[in-house]
Length: 302
Image 1 (cartoon, rainbow, N blue to C red):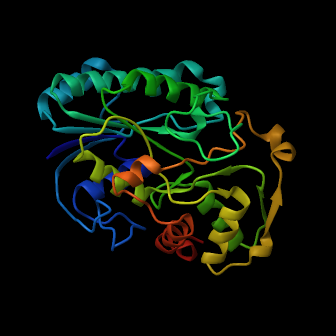
Image 2: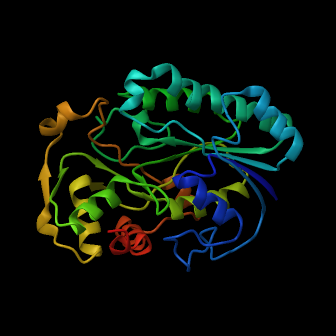
């Protein structure tokens, strides 16, 4: 299969490149392989970073598609600076909504399968339990709004994978920044009243590789099993690194409210029943965090 990946140099993009090339992404589970079934199938992969393909340029996107004629397009390019988006609304909508539409239309012109990614931030957080795919979308911030618009554009024309609290070795995710800070002997504070679903990039890449071979459309939630607060998540990551968990202190959304430009949902845990029904069940979040911390090798970066 010929696979074109946008955002190929990003945190998720680099793991997608590995998984579709038949290589286990850093922090991945060898038993699950690159397709959650132990497989390591190698596809013909073409990756484009932001400097190589501007997804907001419809003609450039069409030109690349015409040259490569892919069988599957995995659209991972995105504007992900949640707080900055509050004052950069035109840009975040251009990249996340219109950019998605341009890539989708170009993929359709070549009858290529289309997969893109969305976020738990399309929800308002008022639900008591985990969100399912057909729950009401009501974003609280401009980043979430741009992703909700992209979801609506794709509809059943492709597959939209919603994930949350994404962290990978090739990025600078919040959880690894916190572990590094603790490794330096500094304390950190994280909210104990904001709950969600952790997603290891390596596991999401494996799930995406499996889904590329399936005839499924619409929206699907992919995340590691279990819900967790930010305080619990960071505490476990610090413990996994063999560091002092006493340096991790709990706080509340209200206490930190003035420091964040964008409002976050209080509960954004994702139910993954649809994925599980297809045999795609990611490991528990503790398993994903432990592998991530081990692969990141925080001590070597001090």
